[in-house]
Image (cartoon, rainbow, N blue to C red; front, side):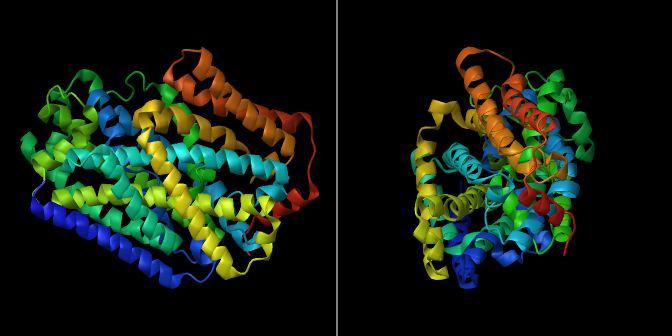
Amino acid sequence: MANLDYIILFTYFFVLLAMGVWGYMRIKSSADFYTAGGKLPWWLSGISHHVSGYSGAVFVAYAAIAYTHGFTLYIWWALSISIAMIGTTFIIAPRWARLRSELKIQSPTEYLALRYNLPTQQVMAWSGVIIKIFDVGAKWAAIGILLNAFTGLSFAHGILLAGTVSMIYITIGGLWADVINDLASFIIQFVAGITLLVMVLINLGDGASGIFTMWDRLPKSHSDAFNSPYTLGFAISYMVISFFSYSGGTWHLATRFISSPSGSEAKKAAMLSMLMYLIWPLVLFFPMFASPIFLKDLADPTQSYALMAMKFLPHGLVGLLLASMFGNTLAMTAADANTISAVITRDILPVLYKKITSFNERKMLFIARITTFLFVLVTIIIAFESKSFGGVFGLIISWFAALVGPTAVPMILGLLPAFKYSDSRAALLSIFGGLLTFILLKSFATVSLAVDISSPIIVSMIIYVGWGLLFKNVKPEAENMLKALEKDN
């Protein structure tokens, strides 16, 4: 990168810190820190839901898949998420906002004690925290690879730089700082993404028609909707997982809906995010699809997007693009840190230390910031050991995607009256059944990627739904809560 690129990148670092200070000025309580006081506008919530749904891993692990397998990446990833979010938009998202207005929740797991019982809530809270440590660790590893490709900064130093900046701005600025970063990241990404698309089309030599003619210059399989191991079965599996994940099984995405003023506003936010997943990745991924034409026999496909950007973008925009990817990653990791902190502070610590429930708002806000700081620190340590878990892709797909299902099934289906008979035993058995399936597959079986990531969530769903059908036990408090979530006040 040129000096101008470095200036832009480091300027963005300082902007992030300024966002943290701006957020700090708006925060008076833990409710402000975790849910923006329930005042998040739908358009900002929708953009934030979209941007914080992916990170620098898209430009590393997914760029490698685009380089080696082509268009199938859009089909199984972005299109699958868009289809999955139809259910999120009309069924799930409004219920999260109503939970906050009805029960005054600040964390996604806070309602589980009422819906099931305290032991079930604790199992789900602890399980989710542990799973998220691996997921966020993968995001730090991805940004370390990107910084190395663009700047030559070592993998370890890249992780430390990204982690430190994120740790500071999210610890002081809370959710407000995070969603403003999401907005800024998307604006920058939009400018840089459109520019890179135009430059690639110009260099393809066919003008706008290059969008369609380019595929003749690539291996035939690159234009296929499904390209092994990314088969139709894999896409369907990923779609099912995406429904649970983007509906709130990935906790920080639930927070975007929880922070909305009402159920109708949360629905609009989800619809905006759904449309963005349908359209924007076609622009964003095009340079990745075209990369084999310009980068022949690349030894490390994970660097394809970075190399394409440096090849075609003018000085200044390279730094801007890296800033947007950096911002994406920090937005997602910071969102996770904020939400995990809410779960620890609101749901785990009061069980371990009951006096916390009597703390005033000032003390609770201090604890919120401490837990946020410590969570980021642990995930940075995991990032240094990412190769032990199969690298970035291994952590994201094989670990997180497979593990998120068992905990997400009782959390998301537990919001729906149709599953009111699935009680705490159904929830616990579904979690342990899914996790046991994951362990057995990892330890003793060699299966396809589709079976690997889908089996845990399928087992969890069968147990959860099946138990409710066999044993029609309903908790009166839970039934009343579910009725209250049907309509906005």
